[in-house]
Amino acid sequence: RDVPLSELTTKHVYAWWDGLQRSYPGTPARNNHAYKRLRAAIEEAVRRQMIPSNPVEVRDASRRVKGEEKDLPRDTEPPTLIDHAPARYRALTSLMLHHGLRIGEALAVCVDDVEVDFSPPEPYVGPYLPRVTVHVRRNAQRLTVDGHTRMVVQPPKTAAGTRAVPVLPRDVPVMLHHLANYVPQDTTTVDTDAGPREMRLFSTTSTGRMVMDTSFCEMLNRLEDATGVTRRIDPHSGRRWLITRLAESGAHLKEIGALLGQDDMDTILGVYMKVRAGRTTSLMEQVSDTL
Image 1 (cartoon, rainbow, N blue to C red):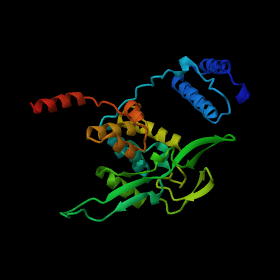
Image 2 (spheres, one colour; image 1 turned 60 degrees about the vertical axis):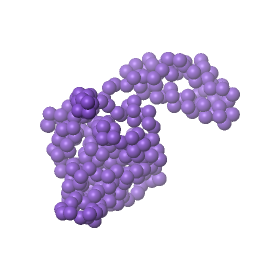
Image 3 (cartoon, helix red, strand yellow; image 1 turned 90 degrees about the horizontal axis):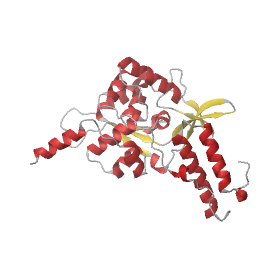
Image 4 (tube, rainbow, N blue to C red; image 1 turned 180 degrees about the horizontal axis):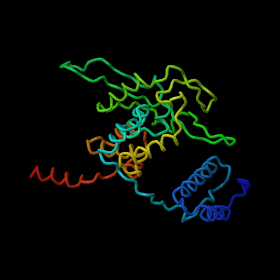
């Protein structure tokens, strides 16, 4: 950081990269991301003609690091966790594990973001469930400033993050029960990138405060221990589960990206989409049935 941009050389970059490897040997993926961000920043300086060329060129750092393979939840595991979660956090758990919201997106959902349509379907043939849609409009991120850790509400990470997510009919009663029993009547003062703001959050603690992401993860760990579900399932696991199930149901990549707020198709294919256990067997059986 002390090297002026105009004096930056590949030698400086190698010294930084080698130091990074020594200091953080256990986080190769994060180190790789740091290198990519540095290279992208300097590339922008080249485009603006602030410097003639990009000296950030470390061959080893450019190689893609294969991240840890994440488990794909079995179909029975998300509903088990949702149904056994504390009643106040059941809807919040559903938004992550069944509907693919990032944890910050789920924590930042407000009451006005939850749309309930009570009109009967056409044609009307008997009892029906209302349709519930959750509008994702913001994201909460945990930041530490001056030694104080807090959740800060910001716009979504990308334009694709702003989206409407239809609630699974299976979980509509969970959402309606939450709206009737656990939505606070008063607003909550939350930190935003533009300063403090009053919001009527969809999910809060019992004292009406915003839920911390760390507190939710601790609750999820206790819940997994109590139900016998593997601890390898985290709030992000719902994205892998939903992307995989949508693909199995015939959704194309653009449709999946619209529901998950992900506009990078390579990320959907390479990071999130998995092969469910037993899926290859059932596919071969389907082929056999056509012969």
